[in-house]
Length: 203
Image 1 (cartoon, one colour):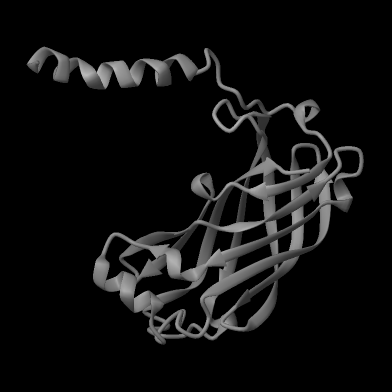
Image 2 (image 1 turned 30 degrees about the vertical axis):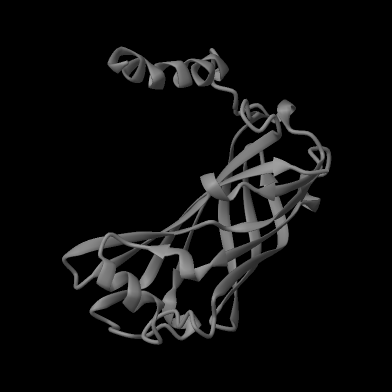
């Protein structure tokens, strides 16, 4: 009986291991991208941020579980549009007390403003990179932001069986533009964003 119980996890794992492909499914090959509408794959998309803390160190955290839509046509990449909703309630840092403080009225005031939103207004493409102009709304305040984006891969997800494409993007913003001024200037005004987004085709 003990031997059977010991072997049971292995019996469960074997079918899962059989599904693992022999090579990485995503490739940075634009020819793999097909036109259509894609939805954010929230489990593997993150918005990272970094801010200077007291002049001593850079402190970082993430927003998880974003949702949104990307529409693109490889033949007309400049006509692409993207809209991303960011649940500010999903902010995460390594310190539990700071997690709660970031959700408070001192910072994001998530009881009143639970979601931030980015909406593109224009795309300029240069090979595998692009500048995505748009607006970012936080705490009900909308300001222009430009993302420096890079195409990172496309292919079929071996588990969901859906066409998937990935992008990374960076930007630098000032939190004071969105009325997040608590502890300025000892906690920096400049915030660096690092975005990793996966999209699955829906139509």
